[in-house]
Amino acid sequence: ITTHLHLNHHTTSCKLICFSRNTNNKKCLCSIDLNLNSDDVSANEVSFLPPPVMWEIIWGSCNGLVLATDEDERLYLVNPTIGEIFKLSPFALPREEGYQTYGFGNDSSTDDYKVIVISFSNTDMFVDVYSLSNNSWRNLPNSPYRQSFVYLVGGVSVNNNLHWLIVRPNFSSMIIAF
View (cartoon, rainbow, N blue to C red):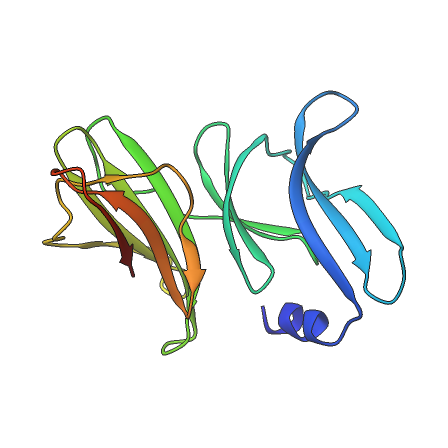
């Protein structure tokens, strides 16, 4: 990760990551390279070692690393600059049927990258955190937002915190941060 950050801080180009369809009409991860000193733009499919991943959703990014899920809802951290992917350990905390939304950021106090998962069903909301340095999940108990609803969008990183818009049981909206 340090090499990746060093490469990105000393460049006159900008890289955007998006999904597109390749020549086989399969969803693929693409890199759009913009040269900040000219009008040059290039787009390329980001290739990884086999087996191929069938990408589904990009949930967020931090320092050029990307959090994405595949069509089987497996979580990956992607480093498009050097073409590496890291499959996160399975989400080991069982949940009843429901929905999940994800966020990805860097905890500067511990220099650790973390994934936050907010899971919710009709009656409850759970918050779990994955630590890249520990390769482990933990549950944040006693969330004051237990009976709230989170919009199904990735968390937005602002001032080193991940933020989501939620709707409380009385239908009032609120922004939560972790």
